[in-house]
Length: 159
Image 1 (cartoon, rainbow, N blue to C red):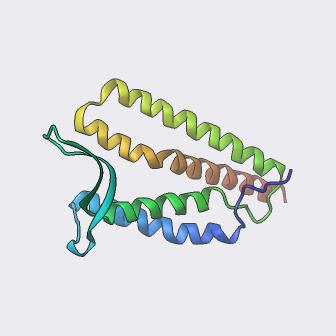
Image 2 (image 1 turned 30 degrees about the vertical axis):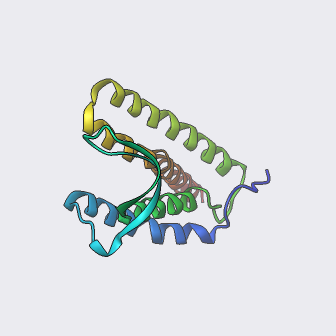
């Protein structure tokens, strides 16, 4: 099977090299609520709905600290590189594992989202939705690499 939608294998290491520090820095900035002032910029906003205000604005410039946006973009791009880079020996069985892992990640992610809709409310729900942007890719990466690891272990036992 020809896989034109996958990145070359060398992008996987670039993805890991970017994903791990980006995720760690992102978690630390969320835990310690760190926003360095040198990253405060006026940025274009399509829609602004200020908290505790009835003023809703469209197409405005707003002052925002862009650290979260930078880290979010780095995590998304690096996750895509890790998830969708070819393996060194990409064959149909690995493609099958890739597809099954992606389907499993989507099912698992939406099961969690359903439970969240039923049992988590208010600002906590907003935080779950923010993390939910990244979890499908992260669940896929974990399951796919776990399955590839199992495949490699079984292949080494056969030799």
